[in-house]
Image (cartoon, rainbow, N blue to C red; front, side, top):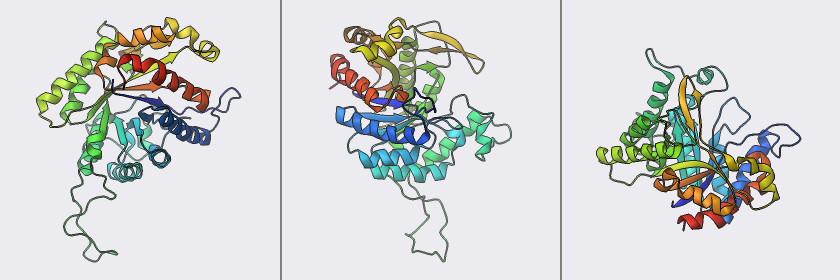
Length: 339
């Protein structure tokens, strides 16, 4: 494990017990938590994207703001639903956010998760072509996005432009060199991980896999990671890929931790049904520091990944979530070989 970051869904609700009661709260607190995480020595600040929900939805203004307020920490998404995206407009936004941050953007994308509304992508103006599924459309958008990120010109310039053009075909601007190698795909199955490798994207795997073989979650995820790396080698890519996994990790070090997560000390994997198929969910790691260290040390997927993303309960507020991150980076991670 080389890097540790946090992953926030940015939930907000106008409830008296929530520390995050509005969209403005969720956005401002996300920036503040990223700043705090950098000061604590963490390596990444990542944000989930959900449309039509009381959660973070438009990532690039947030990423740009985080990039402007920080100087070292990686900033990223986990993940953007590509069914909703205009690939060229997204390339402009991503390029701008990456340049503002000085090349620290790690962009997690995917086909997306179950939606809050029926076919929400249609409201955004995106309709699958005839014979195409919404997942096919997401991959088509992705292919175009990756193509544009290479920075090659493709658009014929106006012979009478408003401003002078460089010679040749034009590309979308701003272009950020190197961003193409910092795109990740959120894969929920072993087969999708192999496809991800073939496309030359990094692998982002969560606490959920949309398949179940009867083995513990971390064992199945470790197999997914190995299949990704084998497919990467077979594809002949020159660079070394990155792999991240997400975990809910709560060392219990004070009364607040006990009150919030004491009941999670007996957490186990869960198997359920998601979109009509069996899915396996990973457990929460909660308990005294030594127990959390031992449990994570036995997690085969954490050992196989280079990046661990800590899912945070953002509605408990910036101070408490900074406390959770500090507990992990100060007391747990060093015992697992981090730094």
